[in-house]
Length: 202
Image 1 (cartoon, rainbow, N blue to C red):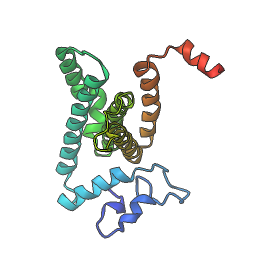
Image 2: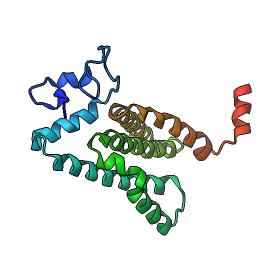
Image 3: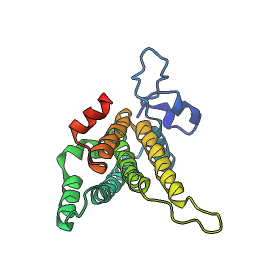
């Protein structure tokens, strides 16, 4: 790896002003790929084991295992009454699907793995936010209440943070916002396309 941002002698701030390959974003030759969170994980790998490739590959495999676990949890939350065998099958298929091989086996593919991890966490928290949004506050006791409202905003804040983390891992992480909007309108609120068009006309 030739990225100087991996080295502990390089100021940490450089991660936020350089692209994925360590070139200043303002430079004409910059790749313009802004992934400071991903580069930070490479820097941590370097602190632990230098340029020994084993730790980099092991980290990718562990991250993929975490992504698979979050994927299963997200499917279970998003799909009501999902049969356990279907849930298990989808998780196993996700874990071993060849489409993930390049991202997991290639060290630089960590950007995709990290972005996917935070993407799924953001979706998971947004589903919780949607469910909590329609949950009424319990009766107040001694003037204290609003626990449901605090819970809602806790989930929403987590969604925002995970969305930002996904974007800082790889740029396409921003697409989770569109996915959550589609979930909210067409799955959670069960709107039909013609109803959405009617709202637009109003």
